[in-house]
Length: 178
Image (cartoon, rainbow, N blue to C red; front, side, top):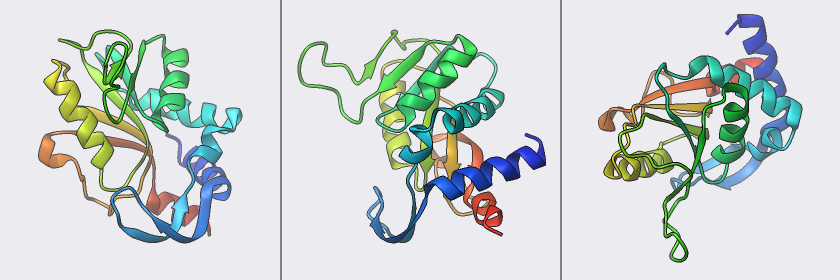
């Protein structure tokens, strides 16, 4: 992505989404700031800008876009619309009625699934989804996320062989604040 575009997008996402206060993250960690990703996901123009950048990060050969519940679903839908690749909606837990599926959409067996997530800090939700999809026969090697909040230079999902491709990092968002 062009450096000016990155700076502008980082500034706009940061301005829209960064909240301060006391927050408990999914991982259980405490934080004094929080990126309320739903604020950019609910803005069709900002969501489109993020999704366009995600398109550029998709690996060749991606068969399905696996949007993680809840934040990854609108992003995966937008990326699907831009690319024509089918979306898959990955629940946190398989539903206990109807089809009892973990992943709603096309069959994943033997197909390359690129996971789509909004924010990654420790990667817990992504780890769970990748493990479950792999158990169902999917090939899962990459997750594309809007914001990577993990420590700079660290990949919290390296131990399961998952590459993280972020649109923006916490460092870029911090730098955009000036």
